[in-house]
Image (cartoon, rainbow, N blue to C red; front, side):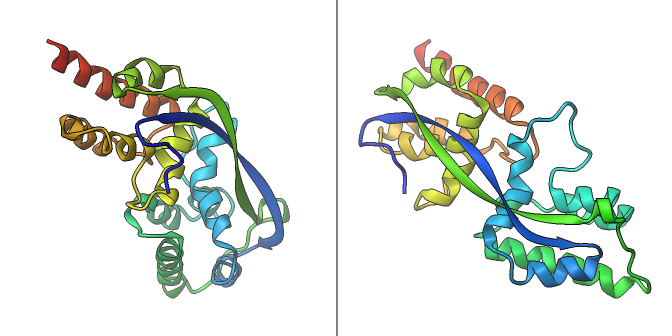
Length: 223
């Protein structure tokens, strides 16, 4: 459920804490076997954690499974199949887990010899736990979003636009969830925000896209 009070939007920030599981895999069969039983927080981390981890350049692929398939197993075909999995298209992490397993099983069926990763390139399963912080800032009017969103940290964007989908009853980001309580005048803005893809972009790009959508809406309605 949303953490916002009726009529207010409380801006929060977060960090995604990485927790080692002690599980690692050297080949695709081992990944499959561990994936069947691993905590769902691992699946969340390996799809979404890359957005929050510090990095000096954009990764070739957007999730850790695809990255490992390409650089650990040197299996470009599998990497490409894993890279196009969009986690936002699945109802929950269990559905996403099943899609991963289906893709891996399909590749195993095609492959006579299962490649092994070098010892220092094995896949390490990491769990995530989100740690939430208060920014001590509360919005009372939707128009305040136009100034607030461009100045949010990217981890705050992650919390309100991505992680919120696990918390809200309608699997919706916090911005649309709050605007939905503020009257029918904001229905067009809710629709526009809903068109912003939360996965195939960096958090910096997401912040920019959201700011543009929100600022454009209020500029149009003010004229």
